[in-house]
Image (tube, one colour):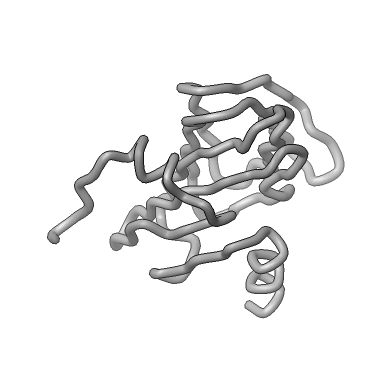
Length: 131
């Protein structure tokens, strides 16, 4: 396939891993994520890329800040909500609901090695620590 064509909603809902890279292009990467109740993505900032996230299932809180030490904004999010995180902004998404939160994310440029699958958040953190 020259690019990626698929049912993004179904692909997101079918994902049972913390993170799965679905497609990696030269300038953009598509990942799907699953957060258990109470779980979060983890506070992070990407100095070199912009990120788009869209919630397909569940409820959460999007946190955005100018520094790692202080979140300047928090937003309650749910199905069909989108979040755009510009390069350099500290951010996190926390599952505040009683069901899994499922979302997809676009990184521009790509953030993770092509084919990455992290079954758990711990596996993701270990991989980031190793790099």
